[in-house]
Amino acid sequence: MTAEPESGAPAASNSDSAAETNAGLAGDLRLLSGRRGLILGVANERSIAWGIARRLSDQGAELSFTYQGEALGNRVRPLAGRIGSNLVMPADVLDDAALDSVFERLGSAWGTLDFVVHAIAYAEREDLADGIVNTSRSNFRTCLEVSCFSLIDITRRASALMPSGGSIITLTFQGSRSVMPNYNVMGVAKAALEGAVRYLANELGPRGIRVNAISPGPMRTLSGAAIGGARRIFRTAESNAPLRSNASLADIGGAAVFLVSDLGAGTTGEIVHVDGGYHVLGMPQPENL
Image 1 (spheres, rainbow, N blue to C red):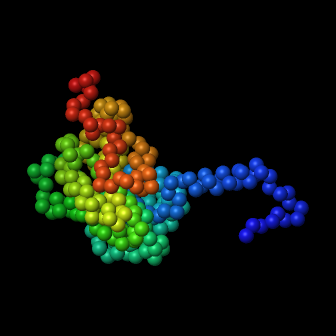
Image 2: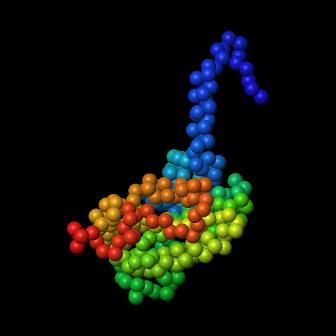
Image 3: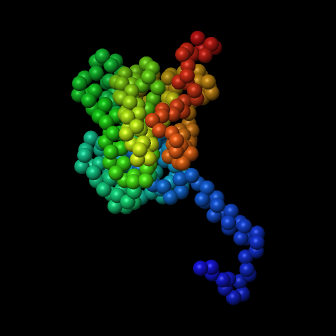
């Protein structure tokens, strides 16, 4: 039904109508309008997960968030509020009951889910500083469970809310394939994570669910700071990468937009490097030898 102008109100001109039409089209052109997703792993505004969340929100996505512990909750809730999200839930990936609650709430609030961003990893500081040969059995188990198995567990739960397909993204690092200083057990965990990405992608592909990983270069984040020599590693990557720069949060968020949107509809099982090209190098640049 089309409403007529009230008596005495001027009829809209052709230019006004065109402006309204263009405004509507502009809104429709956002790549993720009408899509809903879960973000796990935001710690603060410098988190890679937050950089991804901002770019997804800019493209029209409606987001929910999890946090572990009230201290992080006090950081995550205000960030979520900035982009209009009020679905912020506590979750510990080692606690089945907590994850059950998260996905029950998502199912109740939204019914379906379009994407998940898994940005969770953990290793004891001692294992990042003391060499992999000294990793204890219990620390190894915890590192692999949090950093790798959690993707499998969350994917299983999320896929049940994706009857029409969806996209799942996790985060990895070049230390999965090449030895990186002080990365140690986390490099093993990321190698396992990348294997899980490939197997999940193959298994869920017939259901239209795509699974990919983004591999940023060194980042100035809370988790990155836990790696010994982080500043030197950051500078080394920046001075040697083909683009002579490290990725920004916006760069990584842009890759996530591609993978979540229809632009990435044919991409699954992939490790997408967003590191200025550093991963292609076999040696430093000549000027840095």
